[in-house]
Length: 275
Length: 269
Image (cartoon, rainbow over all chains, first blue to last red):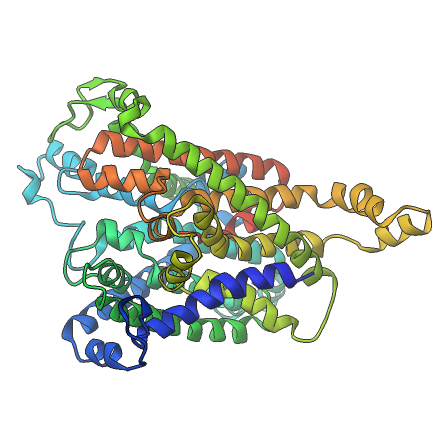
């Protein structure tokens, strides 16, 4: 009964990856190249631009994951207890989760750009006199626009995963700790946090993997140079020079290797405790 | 924490989350909105009227998006139903490995897969075709469909089928009249998410469709690059509609468990 799903994964996903690896080794029969070389990897690892792009990708993924995890945890604790209007607040809260990243990206562009809504608000209260006075939050070297878009969606994702976990955990552990004299901080630090750890780890791995390998948002909101690795790979792939394909594939393969490592870690971390 | 402080924080949180959607609404229904006006000086439906004209090519993109989404959903369910059932109800050797393999496409960047398989699609005539785009959309939808259906079947008691069989039901009847009513809510959710994941795809459609298969996200990107904010915003709002419908329907189908089900699928990109 698993055969259809496995064949989809193996035929489309597996062979896609395999063909990417082959092409990264210079196997490009459509331009008459069938010998396998490591040229693409050598060129890549010897170029400064590659490390700059890798740096951007790691920065975006690292900051997005860290902030989404911390904010998501805070939000989950905030929304955890019953209060009047909680159902409505929860519903509004998850509104942006099914919205495509592309839409969020365009929204961020029109919100944070130098003539965007925030810049107009800054002008209205007399903080700036012209668009150029507004700090560059889009196409900027710190990738603030990209990170903002990821936080917009991933904080909600993290909080919802944690709220689900909190519901399963229940109150008994903390009540027992309170009876034994634990302070609010001790209950959080030594009771709740260890219980939440499996969910925190699983969700943050997913966030890191996504923000490290995703293409659309850095393509839409990122600076021209250096770009995040997926954007560089795409540009090399669509280069008129077909020989650039090997390099595009090599970048894609390295991106995938990082995520394979993440899958192994994910597998280890979630073997015993479910998300 | 005082109730007042909690309310203020939650209010601030909700406002922040709605912020990126605000300029989309203003741009889509505003006109002649230049810096530094905080609000559009006048409201107009220009963007929407243009969207409806043939030269905007939005109609075709909309039809393609819906068609690709529906086909992707049907294929995902066909492969996801048996897999979800097997993973939830039976234990077997190598199950853990198969689970990880099925989940791998949610973690490995789709870019690598799409660039790699493009050459095979070119060879078999699937590149630049609608069917090719459907096939490549199955890469991100299948794992999520399997995941949701496995969760659905995990709450399903297979013994009911055995009881129906002892009472003389055929294999088909026990699936149709015993299993189906119990799992159809989960199947509906899986279908909605498969559709939504396909609906949101940009990169896969662009690479495999080669710019020939126009969908709403591809068209949205074209408008965004051309710098027409009003059109971009109108199209972005058009893309949001099924997403919100999905959330409403899911909330009804899974009232108790909706946050976990929705959060399982926060990552289609």
